[in-house]
Length: 169
View 1 (cartoon, rainbow, N blue to C red):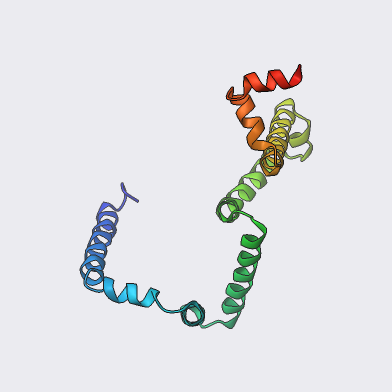
View 2 (spheres, rainbow, N blue to C red):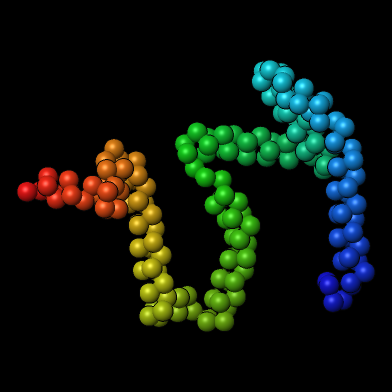
């Protein structure tokens, strides 16, 4: 886009700068109002946030299904947060998933056989690396949750090396 339409590209960049300057000019005098808004009790602020998000989703496409989708993803996000899952890998999966799917489809078309993905030595090495990476992350999480993790980290770092050797004798 930069080489084919440089005027359009730099116009978009300039409009972003102008928009940021306008936001700065508008929001600096209103900082006090935004602080007062955040002082509202949570039981008033939360329903207002939900109401405005539902209105925004419905107005963007005039489709009730989008509102149900937003509510479903909100519930999924709530349970993911309660269960301790990180949202970043899920976002990466949504962004990179279609690209991975397209490239897998292209590689299968080029190889003309699905067995080429599982039979070559290179693919077995990559599968073994991914498997070992997955298990090492899982074991590190298990160790981090255990009560003795901090003691073992101090022993491994040499802080309690003398006392650990003394305990073994």
